Image (tube, rainbow, N blue to C red; front, side, top):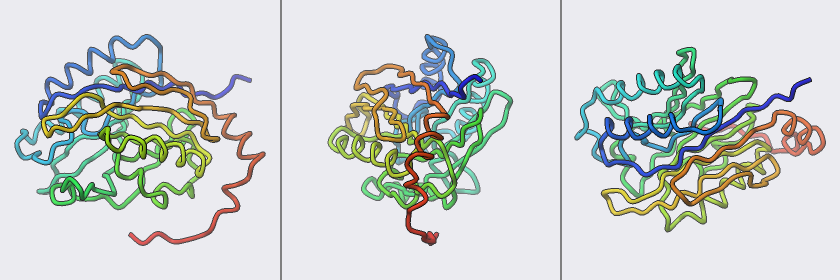
Length: 259
């Protein structure tokens, strides 16, 4: 019997400040140049603008334009595409992650923990619900950047297989990024993927990447500081066999999360 796998591409890239059209063009070239067939392409947080606190300076139609682009690229490549963008809806902005599938299916998640240090909470409305996507036999739980610091929000009570964080996580705090990604994988007994940007933004923040994939025992499968695309294969049997042998999830404390 063939093993159930998910081939992923992590696009670690610099971003062009508040220029959705240019970022889409840049990413289209990177996607077209992928050297392997993959099932899932993961882009950074706010991949069409950079981590902007002035989304009102960008035409509000660019949110939907970028969603349409994601669906087109998914259809063209046969791979799902995931990443977050500033999105305007109901007279407010959200830092919204979209999961676009080749068949035209579209799921969304609004960042739960807006980054108060940068004033994100004053600009973007916070979300209050999880997203679990069932894709090619894997249950995927996608989140955004600052969510990584809050383990209760990621607690694996929904039997997911893959935890994904898309981010604009700056270099001065990248040790926390590395440590927390590994911790989330171990404590939730799932794959944990982090996709960060690189380069420098207009606010002066420098990003050193450190995109990575960890398995359910915390083993690092891929990692890079360069502007590059990382490839990894996730194995469903690895999750099943590890959880059957080490029943740590069953021994966890029960609690209710107040939203």
